[in-house]
Length: 190
View 1 (cartoon, one colour):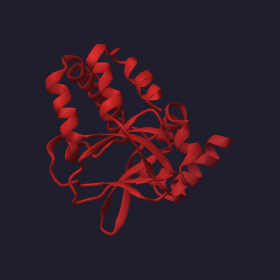
View 2 (cartoon, one colour; view 1 turned 180 degrees about the vertical axis):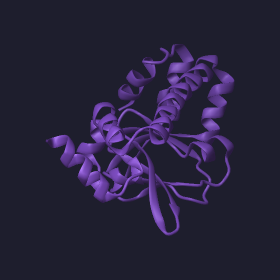
View 3 (cartoon, helix red, strand yellow; view 1 turned 90 degrees about the horizontal axis):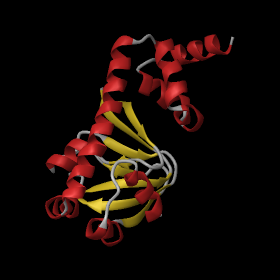
View 4 (cartoon, one colour; view 1 turned 90 degrees about the vertical axis):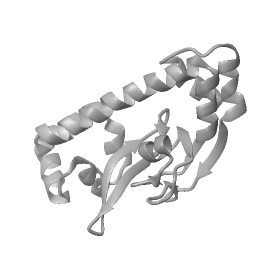
């Protein structure tokens, strides 16, 4: 499992020496059953998780409705970013859509790794820059594309969402109703 994490991190920066050894000493395996929560609104997020297996959805509640705003899959980090980085109460939920196996790292351990190893600090920046680009693409799409264009973009950029996520959550993620999603899907099949 830790080799999977190493391969992911190597895509940003190859850790060496003591910095590389931190993976074995600080990351630990956890299991989350389907429908369980990795983060809960109101609680402080104390861990970041690297998904080895499974997928999660990020959502918040508004007017008694769950609004999905992100999905994470294998080979990505998963955490409530604002809560984790500021150590303040979480404003969202992260729920396992499938059974998940993760490698977890405690907040205080990551901060110590940043202080101790320049490589980890740089790696953290590179991972955050990548996430920021993906989030900006998503926000731009929500603001500028039609429902059909958003669905086509999703098919092209993240087919796993269509393949593995229930359609009611896909429509919430795209910011459209279930009926609109059904209409868009039928138009594309023609």
